[in-house]
Length: 344
Image (cartoon, rainbow, N blue to C red; front, side):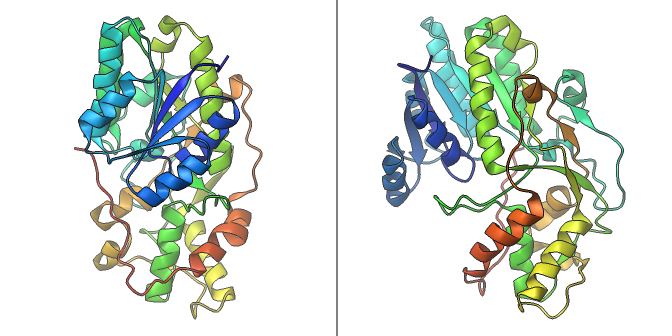
């Protein structure tokens, strides 16, 4: 099925690299956009071809989209120009009668209810009900890019197969590639710098979760579904959630991070506190409440119908066994939060 299929991956990092490994193992010819020569060399050792460039290289991205049958964008959910460059390449292929599969990565921050940790929501979104996802505000996190893709899908019609993967909190540590996720390590680095773990507001918001390796396998199942489905069927619903059936509160995150760092002798108190707003720059800046203070509850109905099931270890076992040791090996003296760029 995969013989002769060419794949272009934008952002072969924490999410994209495990996907790349699985694609190579299945016999796909994979190329990947990387910023650094050293990263490119590592990608080539994984069996892919490296293309040096960045997300602002619109012509380069479009060129390689035109040359490939399948495109994954796993770099960020919020870089509109690179997503548009992909769509330009897809449109160019369509004008020549060539169909493209394009899988874009969004995230369940799109479901942000602006609770800022104040309450637990009963609202749960299901990916087999497109109208639920389409009901989120146009200015919700990630939504401007998602809407650009949805509108392009409608315009292209059956000339392309386009889907949007919407993962929740992604955890796990890939020992092979030494890549960490974002949210929990950022909270841990904050705690190491300031001496306490914490949460936004009361920390009552709930979020779904997924291990990065379960997510990588989900991308492959999603790809095979798109390969086998008719363009008309794909047009009906572009959205796919991916979660393991479990949820956490952000208060629980603060407690678990605090306990782990306290037991490691790195902070003096295990009990978390409310993050002071004047220290948000050491987290996610003004976006801190909608990154680690939201309710974001999702259900991956569609992937489960395709036979996908999560198999990796739980979130706190993974944090203690895998992420925390990697975080403690870092130097944190100059830590100044995570730079977030939001699409507008």
